[in-house]
Image (cartoon, one colour):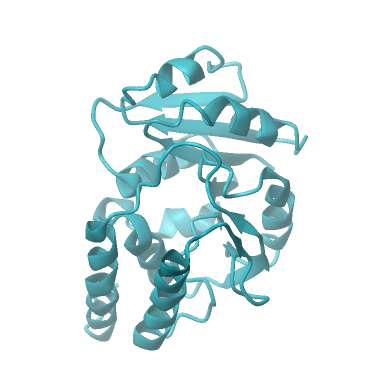
Length: 238
């Protein structure tokens, strides 16, 4: 089985080489890493370029401008489909997602079409977040569940594994959202198409280095996206 970990980056020079090394140390057969860098001013792309290549387990796509998390993942999904990967994993560069959990996500993908690394399936497993950020994250998941009915506890998780078939059946060119709402949109559309969602517990640890990309715009986009998805579903547009 071929699997691809996709890592979007913007100014992650302090983390990127370490996270790649940690992923490759897992010794998972057939696992490659794709970094999608948005022309980071701190040289993140250049660091990856030194180790990436056609014969390497590390791949790099360099984009000319900062274009957002959602479009980066869509670009990565298309790459994965074009190159015959069976499993596709979303992962952050900042060690908030533990590479040691990759094997658990892949194992669970034998049962579920989408596997979420869940911070809230067994209580609250978040380390070093301020209370305001935790309330925002938990509130977003609860709000999403109430509006859309998604049958998971961590609707906005960004550590997740897709079976190839899920991405093949989603119209990736119609995915326009970013951040929180990007995760919600893909989960909801896949669920409405009959794909199964499962969760495995993870411990989420706030980034070791660099700065968070969270913004007020991302939050408000998620607030409106759940209603857009709800109405699209009601009118048969998904």
